[in-house]
Image 1 (cartoon, rainbow, N blue to C red):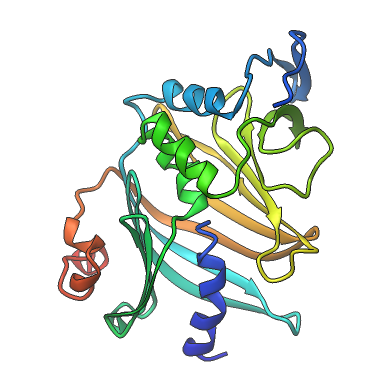
Image 2: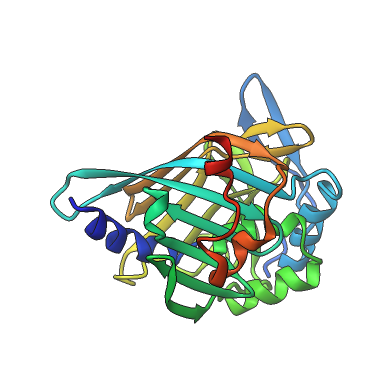
Length: 273
């Protein structure tokens, strides 16, 4: 598969990037040798977002860089692999460079917009944010009002909240009532208060369920990072990414998030070489 076709196939996936109150009884879910008991005390999604932000206030990293191994399943059933270089500044800024870096191709999220870069220039610009950055990272840096406003804009009904479990962990689900897997919703670990899943109709075929998961979480100081992201369509793994060479809170050139300075900004990849 050519670099051009790989890039074209990857762009729709990058574009992802992107109340029912229960009673007072605690939810009990097996979690290894002990039992995790988490009381359900959330009336709506705004309370969940507030709890997430408050838990890690002042301790979550604000910048992040990593090399990403990106694997995608083709319509023919074969896997293709790319390398992407990602640069993040919280909140709201994410730069993705496709290998080779010198080609100047990638995607930039900044100013609530998405810029597709081709040969170092903007080839497309649209309003939009990255759901995964918002829920997995920006939620710990944004004011609660900002996060909830963006979630509503992205189609999450914050009035619908319930408890569930996933892979032996208790989960808070925001955006749907119990048993409803077709409505757009996000799942949060009820004990650790980090993002775990985003369920929604698949972007290319809304009759199918898309399930995006942050997996293999690792503690980093007083914060966390999931070094692997998986995307399933109707239960079938179609895309996954693995983070390598991760740096937490590195010094980053702000010009990296300016589309007009895509080539001229000082990039951490070339700085290390």
